[in-house]
Length: 218
Image (cartoon, rainbow, N blue to C red; front, top):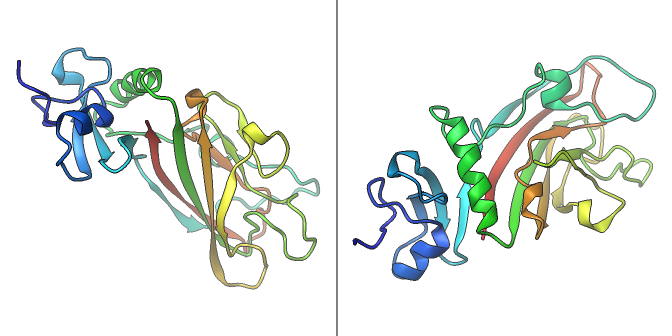
């Protein structure tokens, strides 16, 4: 029996397993097969060999910055990008050839993992990402939707609260900025992020784009 080397022919169960068998391998793209079925349903993952994380990329990972929504509402209500602006879609992970395989494999990957994490970058122009510089509150902060349909927010219950790594989306000054959200959880069913809802959108001068970081399990 050949030890799995992360090739398409000999996929590892997870990146952590690959690291245990081949500690000298460098971080990069490998094939993993969490459900240990036939190798045909192996999926491509980015393996972080420092941490043992198995990371799956979104596809597409970048949603371009533009005016996605032009309907002003007086109440501060989140408007979902996928659900409201993009015909009820959700973010997709893995390659487009076999999205269902990736969903199945991600379910098994969760069973083999104790922690999950993901970063989302919100690119903005005249749209608040997190802190509103004018009111100094978080009422216009972006809301994220977890894989199990829970909303992940700027405030409220600790378990459903994201952290912000950097934020230059706090003013309406015509400049392009970005807010980077990070969410780490030991309840791995909450990731990946499947949708994102800005609150501060609707004006013709308001733009946003999204960069969906890899979802990582370990």
